[in-house]
Image 1 (cartoon, one colour):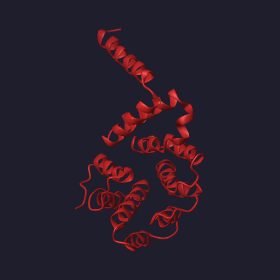
Image 2 (cartoon, rainbow, N blue to C red):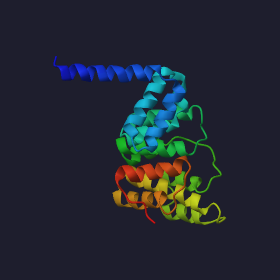
Image 3 (tube, rainbow, N blue to C red):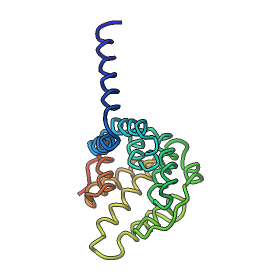
Image 4 (cartoon, rainbow, N blue to C red):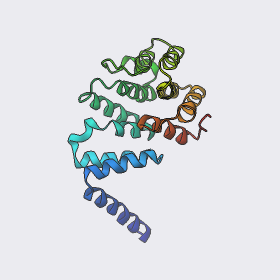
Length: 212
């Protein structure tokens, strides 16, 4: 074994020991920070270390599911969102990300058949988004719902609409539509909350310029 291999082995061992010494809360913080630094592979590894440190935390970690999707770990993502449903069955965004993982693995029809059931959500246009993912409705209906209502919340509604239209398009192989919608969610309708920043990470990872 050469000295380079020995050094590499020492480096890996040091990383493992560091992860073992960190608390679950520190690992969670690092996982989130790495995700928003557009490093989903490293982010998902920190979440993996968190689960090893505290296996009971896994169902709560929908944030890990997002990192897994962008790290192209679609089977792990699918399982994460299925696990999350056991503690939050009415999270209406959870079925959308589960759909995206299954669609990347097995295609549109399989993803629609595997859609997770979910309760009602008053946020507009989440009802229309989930219906579209199930094979009902249309992008036009989603955007019309987002455009309607008070002006104060319109930007946020359109951010969600374009994020989830873009995610659907990417998961089902329509790269042009994905770029169009994600660029709008990350640019013209950008928001600074968690999912708004997800759209920005998405655009950064795909090297798409946010639309003004």
